Image (tube, rainbow, N blue to C red; front, side, top):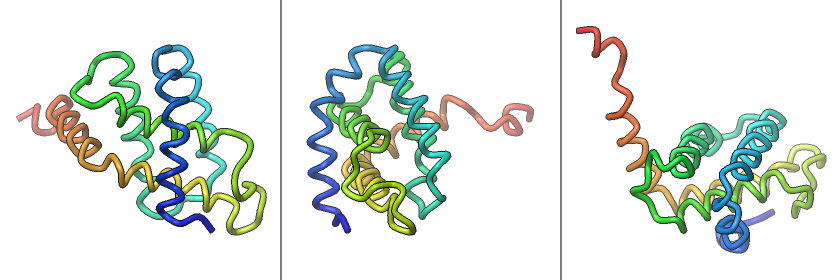
Amino acid sequence: MMDIEQAKNTVKEFSAQAEELIKDPSKIEDLLQKLEAKLKEVPTVGTSLAKVPLVISLVRSYITKEYTEISPKVIASLTGSFIYLIKGKDLIPDKTPLIGYADDIAVFAGALMMCEPELNAYAEWRGTKDPDPEEAAE
């Protein structure tokens, strides 16, 4: 099984590919759509997958230039983990019973750990941008 250091190294490997990909909004949108489809196949595991919508939102907000208060390297790390998730060749094939998605989850969790402060800052920014509808009604 992949340990967290291997996962972080894998994220770094895919970050270079991601840096090129994020220069083209249509390619990044295609990747995000593939990621959303891929995640429908993965059983829900832990808190890492619960952050997927936030990460997808962050990347979209960065690409559309709605949110740019973040290093392109952070976006590349997160996007690199997306590339790993949707590419066909895994360290552990997804079809392997019980552990098929372990490497995918480890890579994504590694990217989250590397980018946690930036992801939290984005979540806070997004929370101030989209106030609670009940609070707005008061």
